[in-house]
Length: 163
Image 1 (cartoon, one colour):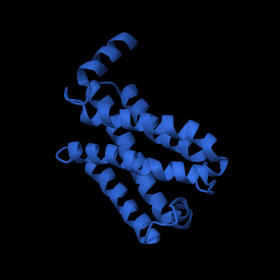
Image 2 (image 1 turned 90 degrees about the vertical axis):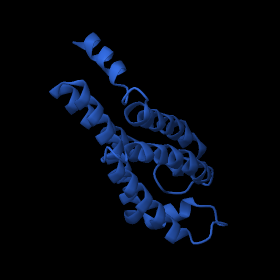
Image 3 (image 1 turned 120 degrees about the horizontal axis):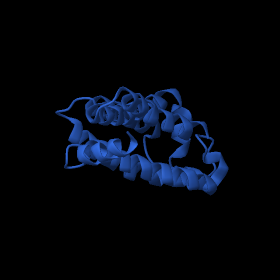
Image 4 (image 1 turned 120 degrees about the vertical axis):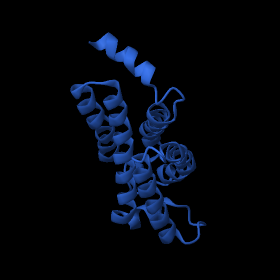
């Protein structure tokens, strides 16, 4: 269960620091930084845990190891692009597409009890993984893709209630 905890910390710590320093724009920046850090973590994992991630793929997937490396590069590119305001929207769309596209691999890994992450727990791990994926998609939508400048008006209202 270490990976979901790390992901939640990567999301929440920049957001909490931004909230503590005040300002709606900083809060939004904290949310963007959090998801960028999460994607950097995901991307680095593809290079640090290559063999374990290769085992998560169904056996019919060709070129499994190069594919793990390529998706790691993709996730690192999304992390960097999220930090660039000009690239943020396409990066956000790519992030959501990645979460949706990679979820079947997590289902396969859980049902086959692979040792990566919590997948060794089997299908019960999906009870944690699926809500985390939904949270990540919502996070990208709220802090990156919302049409009202990443939820600024909503965040402003939340801050008024807290202060």
